[in-house]
Image (cartoon, rainbow, N blue to C red; front, side, top):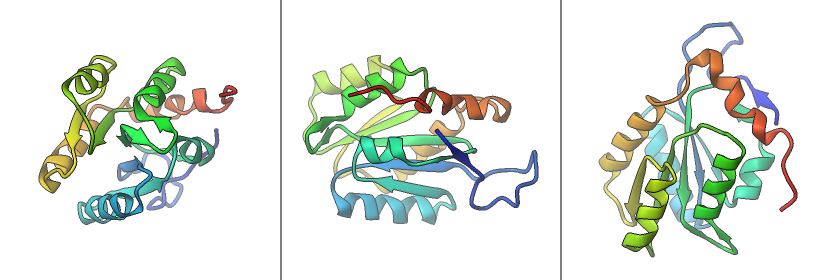
Length: 156
């Protein structure tokens, strides 16, 4: 997996980096809404329609978190969470769903999700969760290691 310099950086080492929020949702209106919300908080956002698109994209060398829909067309966000964990990637995950139940929420949280939202959710609640998520990231010196497991994707 290729990492790329943060869009706000000038390439200098040790400079402060704005967090990057990755969003995976198959609903374009949700992606656009979250993109606007995250940008309004001064953060960089990258949106994806599927986990496959997310995995194929270079990642920024910056603190980050993933907002992941539970139910995607033909895919499960919960299964993707397991894949991320299996690969050893330490990135906070915030789940969201329009079709959740208690069992699903418990499963995601037990597997390490930082938070779980039912759609529609309050914007401030999501922003608060994003703030907590990027505050739990590994130190900058360990940041690149979070993406190494994606360098050699397994056959799915």
